[in-house]
Length: 154
Image 1 (cartoon, rainbow, N blue to C red):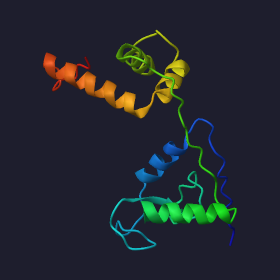
Image 2: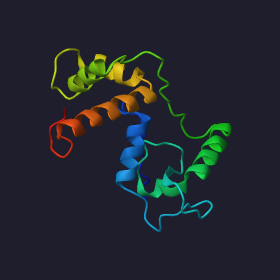
Image 3: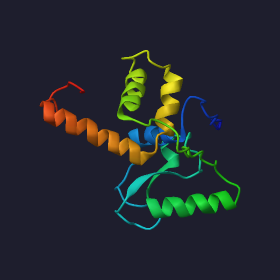
């Protein structure tokens, strides 16, 4: 019987988050509870071999956040799996709602004020607290204009 060799090479245009989202699109079979402790709280898709790019059904299990972290740490100490690359933004990024909107519109192809790579850089570098503040302001303005229930963004 031949054994299939699978190349788990990372695709340079996919982030670790994208790999997790891809795995969640083809969830594991069985009840949605942690395969390690049986918890039904904070359940997510885990990868048995520690490689998020390995989307094979036999590699995916339901796991709780706690067990996923513990297993990942144990695998890292054993030299197994693959380290994820977290993006830790600096304190740079959009300083105003106007800059944020331009970056988002550039990402969506609705503005040529900046290139898509520049927009991505600005969005990534914007702290989450600022992103939340911008989103709140956008929705406050939409509600005041009555466009919060339509497809009109602003």
